Structures are given as C-alpha cells and as structure tokens.
Image (cartoon, rainbow, N blue to C red; front, side, top):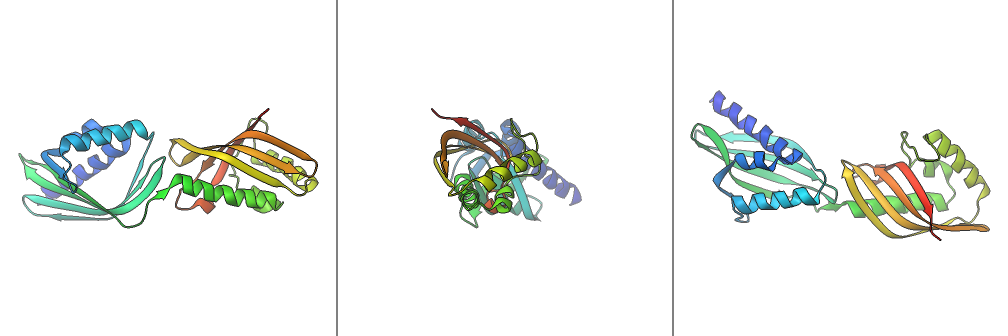
Length: 239
C-alpha cells in the first residue's frame, strides 16, 4: 500500500544520508538484527567495518541512479546503480537492499553489491593529470599549460589566476629547453573532490635550475582526469 511504500522510500533516504554523513549509529538502527551481506558478514561485523572506514576516509559521496522499488506486503527490494567516491578510489556497481516488514516498520535484512566497472584509483587519475600538465609545461605551450588551472586559482604570491598567468607567461617566453622531473608523489584529501598532491620537483631550463617541494591543490573527479584543475600551487626550495 501507499503507506508502506512511503516508509520504504523514507528508509532509503535515511540509509543514504546516514552512510554519506558518517552517522553509523543511525545506519545501524536501520538494519535488522538478522542482517547479512552477500559475503555472509553479520550486522556486528558490517558495522565494525563501517566504523573503521570512517576513521580512514575523511569524506565520501554516494551517487544513486536507476532507482527501482519492488515491494510486497512483507518484503521489499531496492535496486539501483551506486557511485561511491572517497579520497582513495571511485567505484560503480549495482546495489541491492533487501527489506523485511516487522513490527510495523521496514528494516534492512540484506545488502549486495556487484561492480559494473573496475575501480578507478585517485592516485592513477592524478598521475595521468600530472603527465599532461608536465607535457604542456615542457613543450612551452602556454595556453594548454594555463588551461590546467582553475578560474578560482590563488596562491601565496599570486592571488588570482590573472596574476599567475601574467607571471608564467613571462617565464615561458624567456625559457628554453624546459625539463621537469617529479618524484615521491603523494595524494591526500580532506574535502570532497579536492586532492592535495605533494612531490619533489626538479626544474631546469637554459642556464637555470632548481629543486623544491611542490604542493598542488587539484579539484575534479577521478573519472575525468583531463578535467582536473589546479586551484592552488605552492613551492618551497630544497637545499
């Protein structure tokens, strides 16, 4: 009936919000005591895993598409495409939630997930972006190079993208045989779709060379590394 359907819809909204916001206690309240995953993980083990992941990842995004509800008087099935993004990887697959009606309410008794594409690791996407950025830098192609920077770009010395572009344009015009080598790349994230990328950078052109620690703040989705944009860049010399 409509009342039960509305309760099913309400449970799904609360399930997504609880998981995405890190309210694991709220998520636990939606699960039946007999909850079990497709890998036979119990409710207790499932919640323990979720709590551990909350300590590992600073944030997560849960995307839902192609949502379908199948429902009888005592059982319901919610099927959808799930997109999951966290600081380390992106995954996509078919998720199913199995619901049971008991004591005038729905509870989740089972959960299954089947990946529909390989995981995309943020580190792989970032390295792809860095290769393109370095390629355009070494080629001395100013327009493609500056296109890697977001319109909101700012840094300690150059507060706007315009300021940064004017500075880099002069450097490009005076530089020949640019060579950029990066080492020890690390990627971290404390905010959704923002990646702090740190590495040791060796730069040389003509009669000039330097070595320093560079930090880029990059925004974008790992599915589209060619659309990544730099919103902040800082460099410190290494003696």
